Image (cartoon, rainbow, N blue to C red; front, side):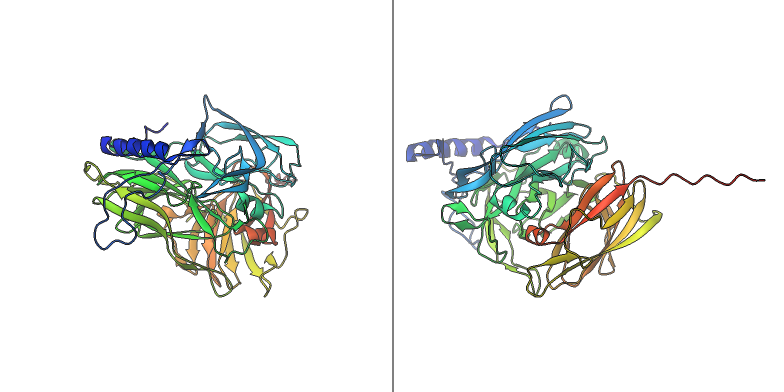
Length: 497
């Protein structure tokens, strides 16, 4: 496991004082509302003074595997829970809007029993995991009915990439309302820190799980969901929580877009995101970005280094998904308070982890996947056809490498996601993508753009899917069935006379 989540003595004292003040002020839902007092903001930075900013960031509770096994009971139920600054009715896992993080290692087995206590069919998808698409593993075609339970069993291969994944409902026609209602959580495959220098292997890590909420009365709104409607963005289910750092400190942040539909374009003023993994897959070379666009379903594991003492906002910047799409406005997500005894800023490595490179692979087949939609934006298609779980749209052979062209012929961006096997992004609109950071399970395909990717089908056969991970679009038809089959036995050679 990772080292403890360390904090300086000064920050521990601040937290203790805040907790005591919160208890004097009163309790919410049986627990104190934790407030952080920080230093005054330097001149020129927006926002109020740092004193009394908001709740301290709470990482979700964790369920951790032991001796190669993680046993989980997951109950789907409608409950009134804390969401941001309000108590709302939501569809929860184990009674929480931000459910437990599942933490495992390559080669582990996950035994998970899901019980459905809501009057709508549901199921579970372990997004990004390289596991079997067949029951009782990651079978997204099954439906767990009201008051029924289902026992999932997932076996992670020993070469499962390590990083951040997530789990969520994948029920046909109901994935958008169920995920928007609360059915999503984080899944971590340990241990990403093994690739870091020894001096950085005990650094503080935080989950930054991004969910957005539309509110209707006293409930989280689930239908109808308009992607362009005003929405409240939360981090780990909290409204603008406070993340504390020391000047010069290096932390690992797991950035995950686990909502139903919208995009995030993250920025932390004065700091760069040093990307060490994408969609749970470690990069070969660490790279730095001022902003990160996270499409629906995407994840980045990043190193963040504290600057001088002060307060800055973790923001999502405006993003326009195209003429037929949506304009997502700027919003503050969290407040980063840097204070305490400075630390020497670590020199980050460049080389990181090894991964397969399909640049020179033998291509067994080429496929084209075309995303389109009707003019009203109410019906969505893959290669001109709406999703039908009874139909097989694509067939691929185990052990081969294929090259796919994903073409977006619509006037809005789409978030392409492939189940079971991840892929190497080769190019976007003809521009080559760096092989050192090319592996994903979810990518943004801008309006009127195309992406070329390569997939190596390994380990597992069975029927699975590819789709737009904007779940409004998936539910309205933008999903197709892929059948991964065993190679055909070679025909016997004719006997020579």
